[in-house]
Each structure stands twice: as structure tokens, then as C-alpha cells.
Length: 402
Picture 1 (cartoon, rainbow, N blue to C red):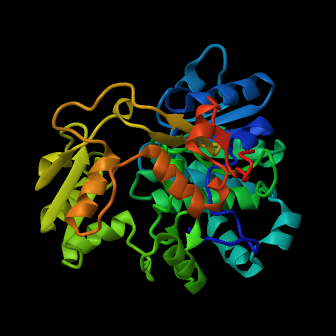
Picture 2 (cartoon, rainbow, N blue to C red):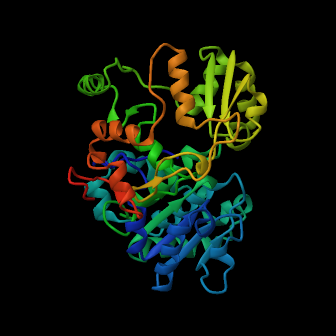
């Protein structure tokens, strides 16, 4: 679908308002996620809000607990067929636009009117009507229309989506369609609303905070700015990249066209989980060198030239950051198995092999370095986290207060 854009800039750290959104939402859409099983802390808060009277729409081919539980049941279950996420999202938008349920004042104030006009013409086409899409999506037209009306007219509307949306060949397009729904109904920019991604794996929020996106450094600073490059060089004592890295699909394409020669993958089984498996396999086969750092022989590890045996969370110390930005201390409970090493130690030893001397991995020292670089970690210390079993929610000031 053609997108249309907000005139304001949203925050960089996606997902960090998830808990605040669910606490004040009147209508909740859960799409491509099973929060009561995969995100139990968020799932418990979601169920609490439902018991308080919030309405629930589940868009998922599965009969998850939120659909089948006799205690908490969704108001509408839209059992979308795999591969038709965008079809259903466009049908919801079609109903809202053609029935005049959109947030006119919000759109006039906050959205690009020219783009919105183009998108409205596109989405109003009868091809997107629920009666037309039902044969493809498997979602009954009457249920889809009722769900669209509820989301548009039910008060604060919050959308929560998971890997059932994003780990898909149409994932990016589906996320844009979700954002369009939120803008269309004015459900952006206050508590109880929004577009809220449910992180796929543990500590994904922490990885993002540390600069794992190809265009950010630690702390969500944009790497294409000279002042940011100078800041990191001053803090770390080394030159920094001046151009963005590649996103995962770009890495795969680069492996196939020969512009990318080697990949070092750890804690991710791209062959098993990423969309378009044949394309991913071809990319892995096209590399000159594939290094996989894992705790078991995954489908990706089976294709590796070198496998570096890592450790589980039980065998290493560090921090996890959850969806609500809460940083918690993790302490090793058992020693690594013979022949394995912690991820941090493997990285340190690789740096030594490449000519950059480093001390052995130490979780407290690494956290001290992070706090010196990332502004919202400024007051987080290893000792402070140890004294707070529930962790600290960033930003944390110099006094250690969140």
C-alpha cells in the first residue's frame, strides 16, 4: 500500500511504551503474536486490562489462549490465512475510510494531506472491501467490518504485533499498513494507543540500545552525523564507520551478488526462521566464509565453515533489557561446558586475533564502558543492579535513579 506520513517525528526506541499503552487501551489488537505464552509479563498485564473491560481483536490463524480461553476471550478473532496479512489490514482500513470513521481532525493536523489523498483513493477501491478479500484471507466479511468499527470508534486503540507479522516476506509492508491504521484513527501520540512491536527474542531491546541497527551507534545516535562520529571516536579511541551497515535482507542480497564475502552470525538461525528460505540458503552458499556462533547445531550452523560453540544464559553474566526498558542483572549459575566460551569472551579473543588487545570479558567492566557512552545508562552500575533485583528502567541518572 502507498504510505502516508506524520509531520512529527516519533521516538527511535520502538516498543518501549508497550506497557503504558496496554494499561490505558480501550481496544487492543493483537496480531501475529501469542503474548500469554511468549511474553508472559506483558501477557499478564494484557489480561488484567481485559478483565477491566478493554475489548480485544486477535488477528492470527491460530487459536491462541486469548481466543480459546473460557476466562478471557477475544471479542473478534480474525483467522487470517498465512500470506494475507496485508490483505486483512487493508480491508480494515477500507471499512474505516468508506464508512467515514477516520479521525478527520488528527489527519488534517498531523498527516501529509497529499499523500493521504492518494492513499485514500487506493484504499477505497472495492478490491479491498471485506466481501472481496474474504475469499483470499479466510476472514468473514461481517467480522472484519465489526472489528474495524470497534477499533475506529472504541476509544484508545493500541496495536501489538509480533513475529507473525515481521518474519514474513511482506513484513515491512504489513508494519506500514499497521501504522496507516493507527494514523487513520488518530491512535498515535498519547498513552493507551500506538503501534507496539512485541520483541521476538529475549534482550532484543538491549541489543537495540547497544547500537545493533546498521544506522545507529550505542544509544540511538545517527552514525551519518559528523558530531556523532567524533563523539564515539573520543569515547572509544578509535575511528568509527561513516556509512550505514547493511540490513539483513541486504546482507543476503550482497552475498549472492558477491559484494559481501563473509558473515559472522550468532544466536540466530536465519535458515530456519527468516522468510524466503531458498533465498537465504543460496546466500549462505554464496559466501566465502560463514561463521556461526551457537549453542546447538542449528540449520544455519550446519552450513557454516566454522562453528564457535557459545553458552546459554545460565553460563554467563551480563544484563538483559526487557520491553519496558528495564535493565536487569544476570549472573552465571554454572560454569560453561568444556570446549565452549561465553559470547563476550569469544568476541574478545577474536579482537585479539585481529590485533586489538583486550582484557578478558568482565560484565561489570563492560557495563561501566556502556554507561560512559550511552547517556540513558549513565547511572547504571553493576553494583547498583545487584542491589535492585527488579532492575532499573532507563533513563537512569547519575545518582542511579530511574
